[in-house]
Length: 498
Ligand SMILES: *Cc1c(COP(=O)(O)O)cnc(C)c1O
Image 1 (cartoon, rainbow, N blue to C red):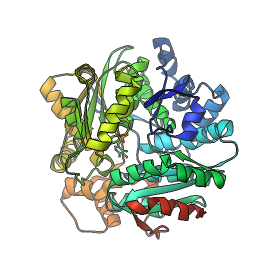
Image 2 (image 1 turned 90 degrees about the horizontal axis):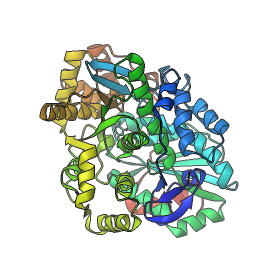
Image 3 (image 1 turned 60 degrees about the vertical axis):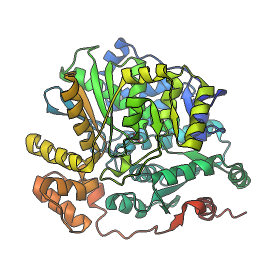
C-alpha cells in the first residue's frame, strides 16, 4: 500500500514515511492509494476477538510496510488495561432501543483523542526506525484542547522525541488547560497562543512547511512530525473503533451481519467522521454518516449547499473541541470523491486560502449528500439535551456528545429513518464540568473542582481518576505568545537559535 498526497498524486510514499513526515512537502495530506476491503468473513472472525486483535487486523491492511509482529506489538502496547479504564477499550452503551453510545473516552486523558494518540507514538517509533535515520523527531501540535493533552500523554518521555503543543489561550476549558499546563515529562513543552484554534493550526501548518525552519532543524539533527489528525497515523487507528462497534453490535445481537447502521459523529476537524467514511468504504455496513456541528456550522452548511465558506463569525461554545472553521481532513474526502483529482484539490485549497471559500462541483455535492447528513446545535440546545438525556435515561453526556445527540434527534424526526444508530461519545462529562453542571442543575460560580464535586453529588457519576488527580496541581507551563511569534517560540523551546 502506497500513499499519495492530496495535492500531488505523483507523490508515492510508504506508510512509515507518511507517518514520520506527517504532511506532504507541498502542503497536501497523505492518503492511501486505495481503500482495502474488509470482507464479511474477516469481520465475522473479529466478533469474538478483543480490541487489540481488531486493531491489528484493521491496521495491518494499511500499514503494509510494517511486519505483522510490529503492528501487533504497537496495538498491544497501546490498548492496555493500565492505560484504559474499560476492558473493552471502546465500550458500547445502550441508550434506548436501536440507539447505542460508543464511549471513546476511557483512555488516560478522558477524551477520544487517546484512541489514536496512545498508539501513534508506537507507530511513529517503528516508522522512524524505518525512515528517519536517527534524527530526533519533533512533534508539533496545534490543539483545540483534547489533542494537546492526549499527544503530551502519549509522547511523554518517548525516546528520540520532543513534543511542543500550542493551544488558544481562551479557547479551551479550564480542565483542558490544567491538564496541559501540568504535564509531566522531560521532553514536553506547552505554549498558549493569543488567538483561536484556527490561528494555532494555521501557524503550526506554516512552520511545518517553512523551508527555513526545516533547514534549521536538519542542521540540529531534528525533523518535524505531526500528531494532529492531518497525520495518517492518527486517522488509521480511528477506523478501528467503528469496526469494533459493529462487532459488538453483532455480538449483542443488535444487528445481523450486513445490516446497516447509521453513525452520528460530533465533528470539528473532520478526522473522526472521515475514519467512519473509510470504514464504510472498506465495506463496513454504514448507511448514513451524520455530521454534527455546534454553532460553528461551517460543515453543516457545506454538506447542505456544496459551498465551504469560512468567512463568518467564530463562536466560542461549550463544546470547544469543535470550535473550528477550517476542517483540515475534509481535503481527504474531497480527494477521494473527486476520483483522486489532485489538480481539483489544489484549486479548491488555493481558493480556501485566498478567498476563504470554495464550491465543489454538482457531482461531488450529490455524492456528499448521498453519504452524509448534517445538522448543528447551539449551546442552549446542547444544555437542554444533556438535561433531557440525563432525566430520561440516567446517562450523563458531555457537551460534544450532546451536540451529536441533538442533531440525531432532529435527523430522526425529519427523516423517520429508524436504522440502528451509534452515537459517538467523544469526552467524559467531567472534562466540561462547568457546562454539564449548568445543564443538569443550573449555573454555578464555584471553582472548577467544586463544580466537579457538585456534578458528582448531583448525578453520582464516577469522576475519572486522571481528572480527580489534577486537583491542587501547580501549572508548569505558563508561556503565552502571539501567532506571529510561534516560529521563534519553536526555536526557543528547542534551543536552536542558530
Ligand atoms: C477533537 C474532538 C472532537 C472533534 O473531532 P474531529 O476529529 O476533529 O472532528 C469532538 N469532540 C471532542 C471531545 C474532541 O476532543
